[in-house]
Length: 363
Ligand code: PEP
Ligand code: MN
Image (cartoon, rainbow, N blue to C red; front, side):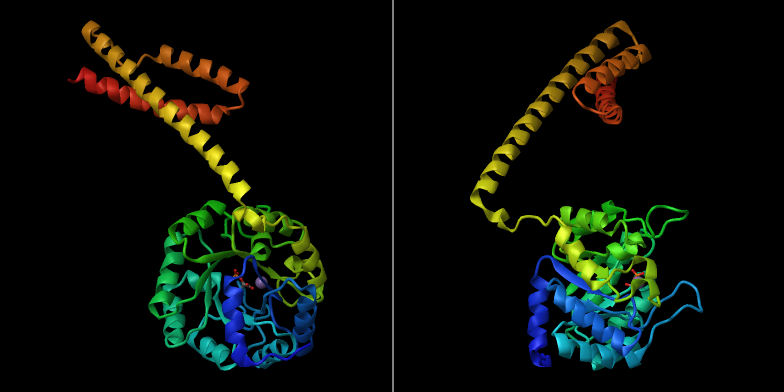
């Protein structure tokens, strides 16, 4: 395979940063030189991987487990890059790690979930990044707190880093669930809404913690319009020194990526847009009609309020309200609306109706 010059690497990384879907893959941890090189070669062979990941310093929940090979693994990654042309990303959590990673030409850095939770650590990393133009990916904090995630990206941005991306790796939750880290998709979606300018990729490996549901989570991320995936891949997953249960071989990774239903690239096609536009107009039309009808409904509520006032009757008449709900549940069932939705909808309409009647009563 062709050797790649470091000079071209920056351009390649720029190109990859724009590519959709962006696929990052590699072992949870770099273990030996042979493992790193063989992984890189086999990942490259899949033809699907854009950037290789490898943990050099591993933040482990409990002491005594493998804490990463450390700085001596960085030249192995350099070598892997030279052999395969794959840019490299590693996790950094301290100023020294940033320095070492940059010294060994690591192309993209990522901030791990256990670092994002700690503003002191994030600030230390951000200060060490000042003056560099390396792209940085920021994982969500382990606890479901968007402000911490946003705080981390603000600190990194303030240090002058222009290329920042997000990694959604799920959130830790107490008790056994089917996931190692609960995806809490709504939080990632809210982050996308607040920062539409940032790329966001999904990390099914750390969400699942196991192999059998990786595809489901990856597919869901793609369906939700994530910009890419970061997936752990090991040449001998069962014997990996960290996260053995969730890693897959490069070949299995290739198959997994092939079985994902990617969103169509020709989404720009005129026909697609025309059909969508027509359906959206229908939705707008129906929404207008619903609003108009709700307005009319409130006008009648006003009249009822007036009539009750003249006859000195209370606003809330429980029997009447139960009858309305029962009727709606029955009708809703026939047309495929859930009881939950009907309840929420009627609660909102009812509250609005009461506040209209209240105004009338007190006028
Ligand atoms: C990792 O990517 O190997 C890792 C430690 O992930 P996280 O920070 O999401 O736990
Ligand atoms: Mn891992």
